[in-house]
Every structure is written in C-alpha cells, then in structure tokens.
Amino acid sequence: MSLPLIGMPNGWEWIIILAIVILVFGAAKLPDLARATGQSLRIFKTETKGLRDDDKDKDDAPPAKPAGELNAADDGVAEGEIVEPRRETNN
Image 1: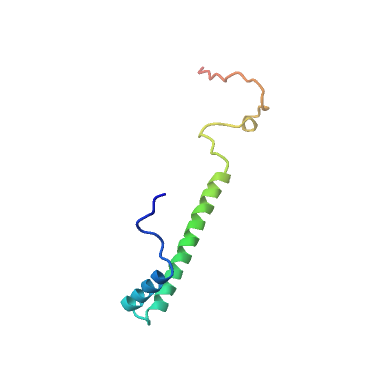
Image 2: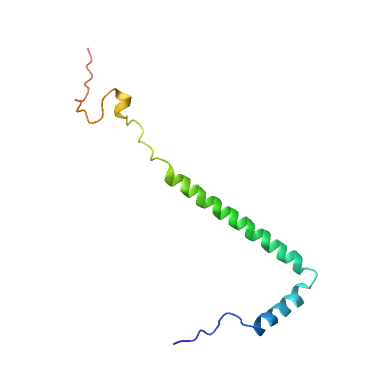
C-alpha cells in the first residue's frame, strides 16, 4: 500500500490554513471573499445547467431532412408504394 506524499488536510492543518488566510486577507475581507466565492459558484452552476439543457434540447429535436428530400405525403404517394421515376420530356 503506497501512501501519497500530499493528502487532504486533517484537524490542526485546517486551523493553520485558516490562520494563514486570516493573516493574508485580513478578518474584514473574509466575508466579502466568501460572498464573491458563493456568487461565482452560483453562476457556474446555472451556466452548466444551461449547457446541459441545451444538449438535452438538441437530443430531443428530430433529425433534419436533407434539402430536396420529400416525404411520401408531400408527393401524394402512399408510404411503401413503388413509384417509377418521373421523366421530363422536352418537346
């Protein structure tokens, strides 16, 4: 079993990290920092949800027909009916 060199902080390590953050940013700026982080996460979540909804809408849409292709109903021909190709005559 191999032990990683760097693991998740435990107990006292979190307290030391919190103390360093307070020293660097100051106690007055911490609420603003937390608020900005929360707003950023909220925006990120709404954008990713929007992207998932866009992908879902694309999957639900019927596939597009190639230009020039007609349905049997468009040509007055019943589905499954065998039709000979039309020939144009120039008189």
